[in-house]
Amino acid sequence: MNVKRRLAVSGGLMAALLLTLAVLWTGFNMMLLPVNSSDENKTVLVSIPPGADTGQIGRILAGEGVIHNAYAFRIYARLMGLDKEFIAGQYELSPASDLKEIMEKITGGEVYLDTEWFTIPEGFTVEQMAESLSGQQLLDGCRFLEIASNPPESMIEQFPFVKDAVGGGGYVLEGYLFPDTYQINRGASEEEIICLMLSRMNRIIDQRFEQRARELGMTPYQITTLASIVEKEAVAAGERKRIASVFYNRLADNYLLQSCATIQFILGETKPVLSTKDTLIESPYNTYLNPGLPPGPICSPGESSIKAVLYPEQSNYYYFVSKNDGSGEHYFGRTLEEHNQNIARAEQNKAHTSNPGQ
Image 1: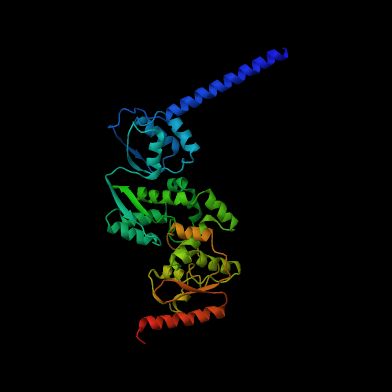
Image 2: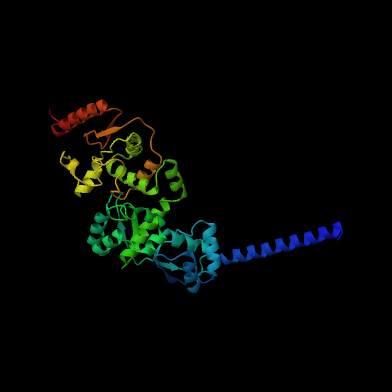
């Protein structure tokens, strides 16, 4: 075969390949278009079950006639990095919506309007959540706690970060039920509600989170545990990173953390002032007695506390004490001597606040 003929054959093959790719790309893009753009008034109620993977969801949507092709849905989800972002629930979808719009709904939790709302504040424990939600008659508190203590295998498979907590201590899901405002289907099961909350946490524990944890020499579970302590200790939002730095410094130099928040967790109540007896309670969560971090989180930290632990302030502080002046702020000390001076200042503030006329 002469050179010209070889070039002609190669050129022909390349042209055929490019044509094939163009046809495939055109076909794929057609799969992203609405099934029926003229059918704007038609809607379908579609249920996405907890634990459903991308393939299952694609088949459900295709079966309901709101997308063209389950395989194209799966490819699109993978390309957009959304294949683990789906939120279980009932959705009102239309065949007049394109794939991007449908994807935004089912990853954004835009569930059907026959819904109820609830809010979990930052710093809530699993037991506080159960009490709050059962008080609003949204779920059975005992069943909620049962799942939080022993999540089903399907839930652990759906949210792999939960594996780190199994066998830790207390409720397995303590610290992982993300504090936020949620919209749920009326009559949603305890498992569906928990999966929704874990889905929000899953957005926080991404590859950047895991990479940063490794850079700090920590596991994601340890980051969440420390963030839960910062959540409880910090009152003034601007101090979160500095408080995180104090705990990192103490961990690095093998100091006991001596976090009052861990004692409050053991007691199950918030005491204005802890006694010496309180700090001597035998518990693996007692950071006055046990070195390092406690076995697991003591509450559900918000995103700000998590970020503070991932990106703490660089400081030489090893101590902090509440100013006792109503600001919620703390005095920070580099040495025990400084800390004792700060304690004296805090006591003066407390006395002045209690007796402002004196």
